[in-house]
Image (cartoon, rainbow, N blue to C red):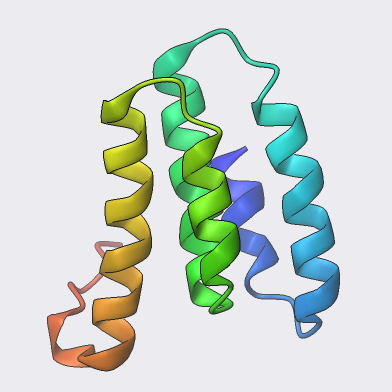
Length: 95
């Protein structure tokens, strides 16, 4: 699910990406595994942040059932924003 969410941000159609992310969010809300849910919600929030859809980042965090999950989701969104404003903060991806 995480890989799917991240690939949506690569679409050239942000509206289509947001629609697909809403569907992914609905599917994630059905999972019973808290860690899997937190990871997937963080990936969705990251993609929303890359699309600069800040309200959706916040709504994604609202889907969390624990404070740890909310913190992870919101920090993911804030990290993307910090990297957008200050590209030098972005860590190089390992291959």
